Length: 332
Image (cartoon, rainbow, N blue to C red):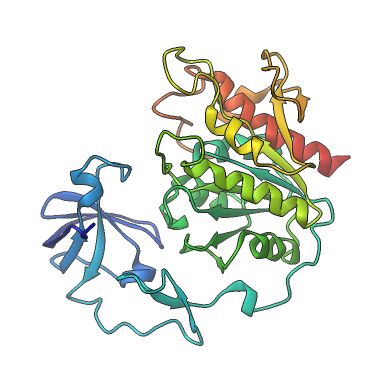
């Protein structure tokens, strides 16, 4: 399984978003993470990883900057960092971990933790939570690893709907780096956040098998929330858009992760949609007004697999239900 690296020249810098740069290398779209590989500028001599684009995998049709040979060599490690991310791989680097920098909460004391098996659920979950609560976003493995890749999280944070972000290893490039989901939730509790939204990054690792998909990370997050005395809520992945697709109805991803959840985990179910008989650990939620709340988010139009609010309404309404359930537990 060799890396697919190509040498090229930066021919355009399309957009700088702080922790993410969109650029072109020899005219081919590429992304760079300057906190990892250093700054980037026109005419820099770079190495890019081309494998996902060339194989038409989940990179979205772009390369990823691997090293900047012009200005990214001999970069100093993060000050006082001594724990390795992605250890013993060609991408290993040191960083400070949240566990080293302050006390963690012993208990979540009932704080709601909403667990998403897809990144596209994050927006409607936040719409259900609404303004007011202090929210931490925690990214877990199962999709893209850099938190900084998410336009959704960046926009929600810029507009105050997400206060802080954490990356659970091997995820990276967030406000805080954590070793485990348990410590990330405890960090959120110690930070004074009222609620936590856990999700995989954009895209999903999938093998078309019951146990071999990234969405199962939501079960790990839910079980960790229960262990830390939080209120664990699963956002159900449901679709009524196309009866031919594998995820029609309640996705097999959701059924698989709920089967691995401990007692105390609740699935949020939108009122008005027929519920499968096997989904027993649930709470039915009135989702009246979900369309307006989702449309009012400070995001480009919400979409999932190319479908918008009107194309697959129950996908968004079910994620909204999880956020509204969390809000009811905060207000109750």
